[in-house]
Length: 231
Image 1: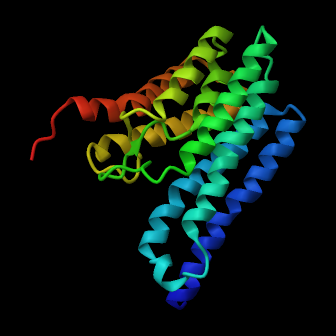
Image 2: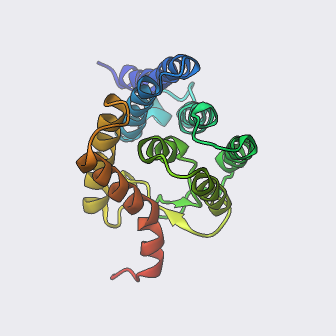
């Protein structure tokens, strides 16, 4: 297989995320939340794999006719932001309707501004500001069903953090603590998949794993900023 063909297949692999996004949206419209999140978890796995493949097969050189970065951003906005926000609004987790409206407006507006910010990546390939991973946050909301005031507070706080000088790790690309970050990201993906598959009643062990891994992924980047790096 030629280098050009390998690079093209990487783009096509990335593009499957759009199909998974459509399947997730169809499930969401029918209120099949567990099915929706299963598709979103699959899209999340694709998103975690396609980047290393793109760098390995040098898609910018061998398939430059397609903009892989733009392709990835389009799919990420659908699967990380738009569909999860729709699900949150329709979830029934809000006792007051206005809080749901505030959440979806804040999430979709803040995230689209963040996604086009050219300063979103740091030198060590972490994210400057919360990277709009609402699929992860909202899945945890579905699993833990917190009070709607807590949901509103978390949504506003994370949206504000998009535009603050706080860092969030990229589990694959952030080099520092990678030996810890990657296994915990795998743990989160496993627990998220199990929670969705079990219609968000997976048992306490999975919920504990989901909660702890979420907290680590949320705060690891900030801890890196606080703790000096040994050279």
